[in-house]
Length: 304
Image (cartoon, rainbow, N blue to C red):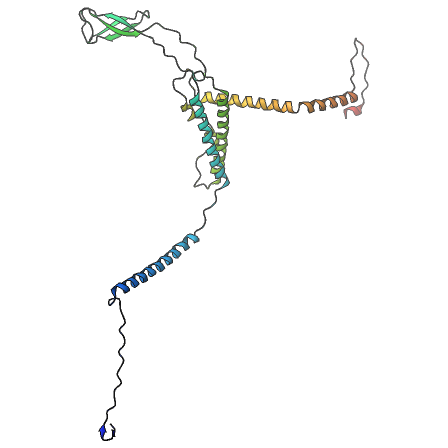
């Protein structure tokens, strides 16, 4: 220590400035909690965006689905068209009248007769009697509880006399239904061919036991069940096939007529020209009448 003017002086220590306390979240809960929530939300948003980007990347990295083959697309289109044509035929069947689809006629062939109970028989016993409507026919019946034992008779139903059944009326399908049935059969056959080609294009593991010629025979399996069951002439698969064959032959005849009528004029003109040329070029030898004929000389060159 140095002395100046007889006074002892001590060096003054520099006071350290107190650092201002940093306000933590505990000191100001209202403000800092909000800031903390915002910060947390920002952190969550950041993580969410990262997760989205991380999730979106594998989706983008996935390969696009493979395109449908031409065979499969063709088979699917024909299958849809086949269903539409089937529904058209079903709607026409539902709209047909009784004249187009005649029903069976119910014939009552039972008659009630009174049977006498023999003196030695009682309720529950079996007896035999002759049918008065059919000579020589014997019937067996059990005496019912409702039998009149005072008069010893009871009533029973027996077959009536044989009646010849009326002639069965055939179905009279309208022309529109025949055409719709023919179109449905053609579309079904095309679908079978397309489905067979698609099946052949698959690998051996995925290939199904599908034969187009066998499946073509099943075109009317479901449609035949759409007709009423009580028809005078039942409709079966062979009957529908017959209609389709007839419609196919009729259509081919109509097409031939159209072709012949369209090219008729030009064909006649061409035939006239050709016949005129042939008449000019050809020579006709008429044989002579009688028993003596001219001798014809042949050369060896004619036969070489």
